[in-house]
Structures are given as C-alpha cells and as structure tokens.
Length: 219
Image (cartoon, rainbow, N blue to C red; front, side, top):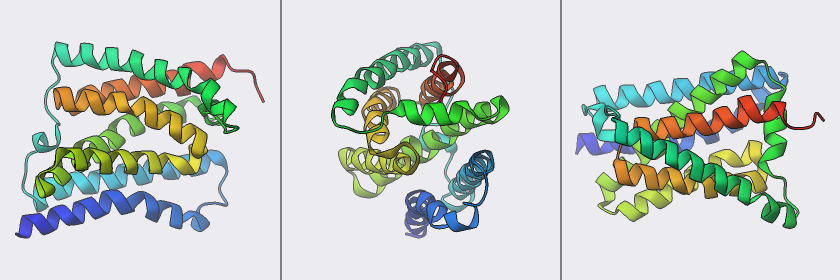
C-alpha cells in the first residue's frame, strides 16, 4: 500500500511538473529566449532526476520497471525505422495544418534554430532522454500497474505528452508532434525498451533542431 502511494506521488510529479513550470513563468519570463531555454533544460533534468530517485528509493523498484534496459541491435533498427516513419508523418501533415490556418512546427524550429549550437544540442538530449523517462516509461508502466488497463495508461501518457508541447509549439505544432509521437508509442509497446525510444526521439530532434534550421529561410 505504501508503494502505491509513492507511485501516486510519482504520477503527480510527472503530470503536475510541467504545469508548475508554466505557472512559474512570471519568475523567468524576463529572460531572453536563450535564458528561458536553459531554465527549461534545468527544470526537465531536475524533475526527471527526482522521479528516478523516487523509483529507486521510494518505490524500491529497478529502473527496468520503466523500460530502462539494455538496447540490442534489433531495438536500434526498430528505433531507426520509427524515426523515418515519425518524420514522414510530421512532414506529411504540414499541408493539413496550414489548411486549418494553424502554425506548423516550422515556426518553432526557426525559433530554436537561432539559439547557440551548444544549447540546441543540450535541448535535443534533454527532450530525448527526460521526456521518454517521464511519459513513455513512467506514465505508461505505472498507470498500467495501478489500473491494470494498458490502453488507459497509453491514453493518459499521450494526452499529457501532447499537452506539454502546446505552450511552445502552439496547437498546430502540437497536433503534428502528437501524430508523429504515435510511432513512439508503437515502438515502446512493441519493444518495451526505453533507450530505443530515446534513440528515435534524439534522432528526430537532432534533425529538427540541428540540421533543418540551416535549410529554412531566415526570418
């Protein structure tokens, strides 16, 4: 029973963490874009490290319980295939998002493309690692453990993941990211290997934040 309540605390940490970050916006909104990005990186790692400590010392469970296990060659191949599929989905939805009169991910990519290269690399690694731990690993596995319903755990994780991207990427970008992330969920459910999802996520964000900004017209 005690472990159950610790898990509930972990779920609240994941689900409420991003909301707390945005409620604290008045305290860092005076910073320039670069400063706000570093704050976001620090917050993401702080939240994730707190969650990992809760798993090991509160729940007293191994990190394998959230899919953090060794990645084999087959996992890596699946991650690369998922990267190609996710990128195709996001690119293919651009005309639809524009037809709806919404902003696409291109706007956010252009904004991030103006940040220093070392910060962009840090953002790629931060999102690829910390978001997978929180949303794909912890939320799916723990909601499933508490409810016994895998479908419910995936839906809650998915909605939380998409909602976390709304403030920066706006509705249009969040829709694209949400559709592309369906591949991430399929990858995790098939392999139950979080490093594979991290690899796919890092490849996707490296393409978006490091390569594509140099190809887009400057604003």
